[in-house]
Image (cartoon, rainbow, N blue to C red; front, top):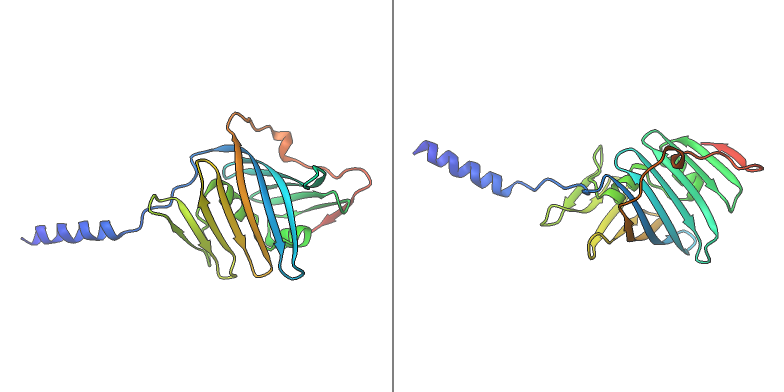
Length: 202
């Protein structure tokens, strides 16, 4: 009788336990995306295209361009460093992978690992983060102690919309066309300062 009771308790606890959050099944991606970015302090709105090249848990490159196709910025990051060329400023930024770099270079006050999480549908771990999944076990939202909030909206797979919000910044990011045939090459994940550009260490 006691063993039967314990079995019922165990089954009940297992049924109530939250499902583990599933990461994206893709290990490498090339995404064609579009984003609307709003700077809340001065109410500026920008609509841009972002080509994304990423290797899960390792490297990421983003190429941002304006509505007429002119280049705005190139960004390369891994878990340790960030490099960025801002063409509109003629500046080359580089530094450790930190929120400070993203804020000073792009007025985007989020740590770089947030971009990996958004692209690969990953749970953000560490002090201050709390994430929730949908009934299918897919990531649905993440919120941290600094009120950085991320929300995923599922469209026809693999398309999605991800909304990123902070106290001063909002981004609605539409992931449209996915190229799974893309093969990463080392040279794509390295930037050098163009001639006559100012180098800024952050």
